[in-house]
Length: 171
Image (cartoon, one colour):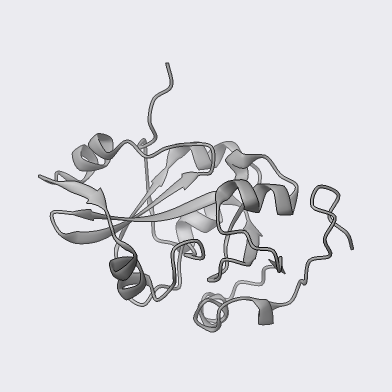
């Protein structure tokens, strides 16, 4: 099966997911199609091009720190996170982006491959309401080369996320 936008033939087995993420899928009783793209889906734009979907249908799983505690923020690929809105949602004094070492320590995954659930450490999860505007969304499956598709409400539920408004407002 060739992808019309990228011209590549993706692999579609669970074996292409990160082992920790594949285990999380099993524990949650979820059966999803994991698609692998050898050239990578590290950024939201790369993932959207590979899958052949709108940028807003890609889920970015971003780790921030709120008063030095990690928090996962899920937002669509076309949006930017408003750090001040995250701070207000959490009642935190300070909020900032986590560095690569903290992302890996918290989630067990490298930046560019962080899935919305199946992490090493349970964190608070904020899911931007904008994700619910889609019938289906695509998220990383634990590596910068693999993604999976799921209904956004199901994805947020399995991530144990709280639906909030944390995207930057557009003019």
